[in-house]
Figure 1: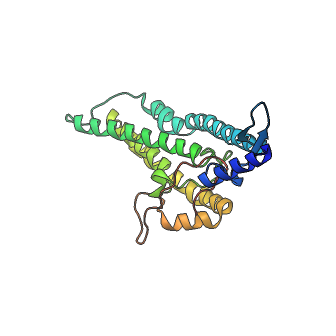
Figure 2: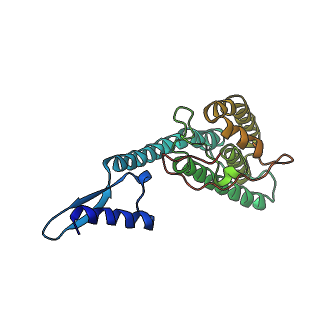
Figure 3: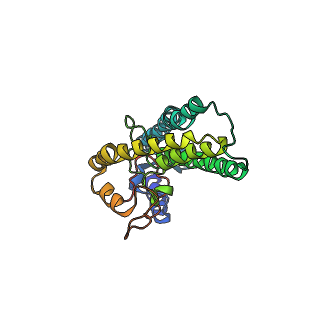
Amino acid sequence: MPWFATGVAVRRGLLEAGRLGPKRGHADIARQGRSHWTCVEPSRGGRLEFRMERKGQLLAAAGSVIFFGLAPGVVAGLIPWWLTGWRITNPIPVWGPMRVLGAALTVGAAIVLISAFARFVMEGVGTPAPIAPTRHLVVGGLYRYVRNPMYIAVVVAIVGQALFLGQLSLLLYAAVIGVIMAAFARWFEEPTLLERFGDEYAKYRQAVPANDHPMPGMQAWPESPMLPAGSSAPA
């Protein structure tokens, strides 16, 4: 069989097996040596696209780490420390159970925050920071059930510290932060997302509540896998 016929046959077999397709940007390179052989390797465009995807996720991860320290790290960590010195007090003689509850809330909130930031990197290919937004709308994980899990987690982390430390003044601080975040989400974040993602965000906003109190007719958004850069989130 001529060498070029061998290349065609190999390509046809790969296409039938589902290992090669035009969307992947692969190219068949058939060469003739002492014994003819055919190799299939990614095209230059495919390799470049993969590198750009990986670079986008790495940059998003770096930006998210920085923003994590500047935003929730300051609001839920540095300022509570500045207000209380993280001194442990006992508002009432029997405060032990409340301290345990506070520790559980604080740890749980930290887990939610880290998970949400990771989803922004892997699914959205971006950061929660307004100056470095995601390429895709983040709708997976906890975002299936509530639109603002980060804001809720920050407030819960402050409340948890208030209970753990016995510093009830932090409850007032948590209430103030909750009002500020709700106003920011309503008057800046939602219009920005609506302008950026259009109908995709409009459908998502209609289906998923902003906080942890679902409205009548609302239900969980369909599960979304972690999306690589260059793919699109479900509408």
